[in-house]
Length: 176
Image (cartoon, rainbow, N blue to C red; front, side, top):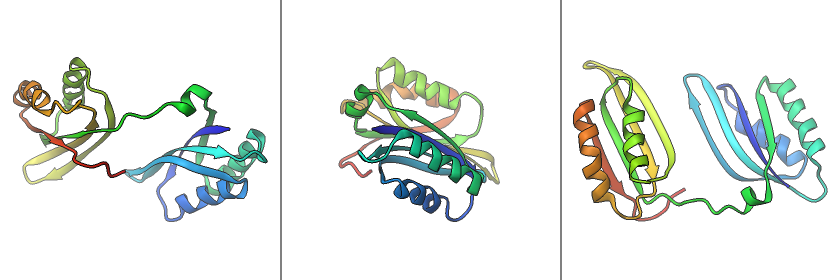
């Protein structure tokens, strides 16, 4: 049985260990995960596989104990067979954006990519203070179908309109 877990809480040392220990205690295997810290908060999404000797009830009990002991917030959802067998898309490019922070950057870039039927696999953004004002950085992993030139061309208008630098970089090999 595969379960999607969403876990969040205040950033501190040992969160990954605490979650992994709770899952290990009921023989749950972490198959896929994404974890990050944002402004003092830590969040993770995991897909875990329960072995045949563990039940969803045991997982829920273990996660409830984890919440009580650590103050983390945990949500769980059983995955359907279709979701479990779904083969994820592999990104073949990274779109980077940098420039002065302003509302609408994520929308403008994602709108261009959606118009090109380009799936976005992962997005990471960050706003930082600098001497020139707040600077914005974004990296999107996407599936271009190896047509990065068309993407770069289509993103030129958004780049000019927003006053930010937008580049498309082909990925040569997959690294997590």
